[in-house]
Image (tube, one colour):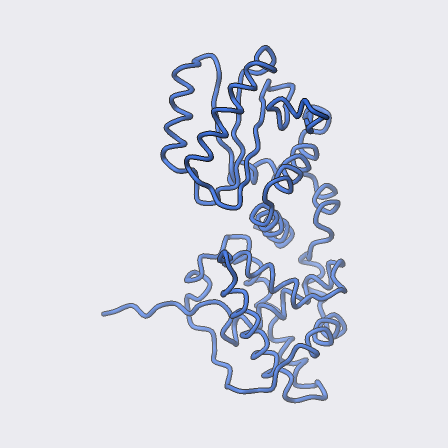
Amino acid sequence: MNLQQAYYEQKFENAFLRAKGDEFQTFFERLMGLAYKADFMACRPWGNIGDRKNDGFLKSERRLFQVYAPNEMKAKDAIDKITEDFEGAKIHWGKHFDKWVFVHNAYDGLPPQVIELLLNLKNIHPGIVFEHWNLEELQKIFRSLSEEDCISWFGFAPTEETKAKLGFKELQVVFETLASKAAPPSSTVQPVPQGKIEANALSESVRDLIKSGMSKSPLVSAFLETWYDETLGERLAVAFRNEYGRLRGTMPPMSPNEMFSELQAWAGGKERGTSEHEMAVLTVLAYYFERCDIFEEPKAVRP
C-alpha cells in the first residue's frame, strides 16, 4: 500500500484499539457518518427511553446496529447483551430492519459461545440476517473514505513527495523535541536483526511505515554527525529503549501496533500536524527501530 494509505490505516486501527464503551460508539458513528452520510442514522439515548436498542441504522440496507465494546470481552456478558438488545430491537424496530449487526471491539474475534448464539438466532429468525463486525469489517468501510474525510479525522499524512523532500530542517524539529528526553549513554546500540519486523507481528500498514522511514534513515545518520552534541544519538537510543520498556510493561498489555503509535506520539511532541513533520517522525522512529532495542528481536531458529 502507498505511504498515505499505510499512515491512515495505522491511525484507524489504533483508534479502534483504544476506543472502549461510549468512545467506541462515537468512533463507530463517525466512521459510518463519513462513509454513508445521511444514509446512516445515529441513535443516541434520549431521556428515560434510552436508545431502544438501536446504536445506528443504515436506511438503504435496512441494517440495524448494536455496538458493544467492553474493556474485556467475556462470553456470558456478551451473550446477555446480545440477547437483551436483539429482543428489544425486535419490539421497537422490528418492522424497519432485515439485518442485525453486532459491532464489537474483540480484536481476536468472539468467543465460540457467542458465535453459537448468533447461529441459533439465525435459525430461530430465518428472515433476519445476523452479522458480527469487528476491525476487519470496519477497515473495509474506512478504505472507502475520501482523502478529505481521512484528513478531517486524522490530520495530514506523510506522502511520497514529503518523503522525497525530507531534510535536516524537518528532522531538527523532532530531535529538539527528543533532546530533553535523552538519557545518559549506557550501552552500545546493536544493528537490527534480520526478520525483526516480521517477528513483532506488526500490521501491514505499520510495516510499510517503518520500511518507508528506513529508506530515509541515512539522512538521520548524516544529521547526527553534524549535531553539536555528539552523544545525542546514543542517548536517544537509550531513551527509546526505556520508553519501549515502559509501554511493554503496561496493563492491560498493548499490542505491537499500539506501542508503535504511542512511540510516534512520544517522539512527535506537540508540533505534530503537517505531513512533513509526520514524515520526519517516522524516519527517526524507523532509524531507532533499526539501530536500537525497541521491539523484540526474532528468536533464533534451532538447527
